[in-house]
Length: 387
Image (cartoon, rainbow, N blue to C red):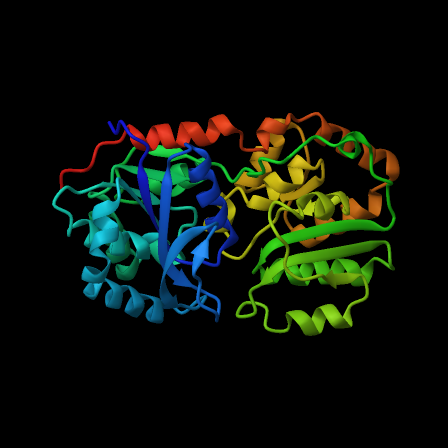
């Protein structure tokens, strides 16, 4: 067990991902002397020099959906890993986010005379890992083989463990559950959090984060167009134009459908979520697989600000809400259920939903200092794998 505050080397698939910045803030909050260096690829055009004040080693640009290019980038970095030897040798703990970075981490760790602890962080299960053919079997074998060098697995939803890691993957590691809770040390329960919103119409739905689900986009567009002006959808974040290439054109052509650009987390969350009645907590990007198992960031963000979540009944988000007696869980077929819900919605029904949301303690949604300390404590307690 490590006695001193650890130095963490964080390897990530996208330096520009806001979730990476949040994880770094959480790690730093876990101990005053914890230091973090970060290395990884990026999805932005401009190079990344640092993340949350931590020096960043920018390994170059990769692209959403560009799997072959990403493999080539990983192979290049593993071949040139010697140039990063000092960073690996300095680390007490290496955290590798996603499978591609686990491969880089294993290669870098092999350069160390005294191998550091390696932790695999998997918050999304790539569709190739779920492939039932030869490609999928090869990917799962690779993930299992690489994970033998790791000491623990970090993931964010129990359904990932139940649906993939236990029955299908070849990973046999202790699990550290790290939910996608909001990290905001400055959060204060301001007076307006206890004030009910003015009910609609117009009923406002907020869809915030990485906007990648074509089915959600089409469904919400139809909902707005068919509502006669009684429903508005506000979109903020990063639209995945490889998945929704006509995103801006459709938004511009649809009254009541708004895109107001990216936002800063956690600074803008209060204004964003207090401005809407509902959180769109539905994702069908990888329907029946990753999207059915995750508990999205927006679920926790909206929950913290008493926004009523809209979720699909048959997925993990829906089960999460039913267990807590909050939100709206919609049955399949989803477009019909969504339309019927808003057709029958009135002020009294909404106030009942909002009141239930207000009764959930903030600790369900908000990461506390003790959570950060517990994460660092769990990491410090790990022993390096002997392989």
